[in-house]
Length: 139
Image (cartoon, rainbow, N blue to C red; front, top):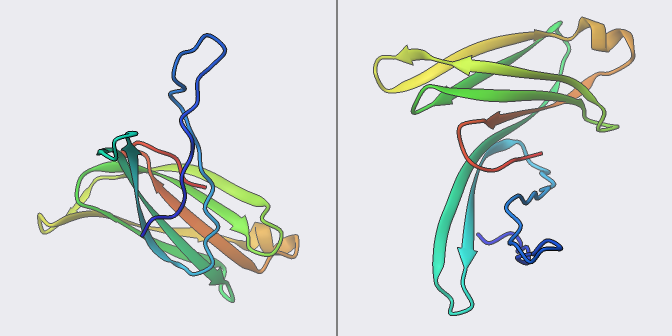
């Protein structure tokens, strides 16, 4: 499914801009796979990069949020936890995923203690995991 397009830009010296960003508003928790594609004026397409991101929404009645990260290869994930209501970022962390599950996938199970967040009245959390080995950025 095509989401949106960004126009190719040049800097003040006429060089093509190399870094772009896009913010997608996710309403449903799940695994999202993004492909960044360049389309020439003749309609030819070239895959520039791919990005996997997991969005989980969690109401925590316990003191912990469980996060299971999986990947086909060893990778690094950036984990972000937000207050779901305000969008305030509560945590940002880099996690290595390098435990092998029977030679099929790499995985890591992480538990985040949310007691400190609850002391400030936060109850619902949005958890985002970003595969850092892919080209692109997701927020």
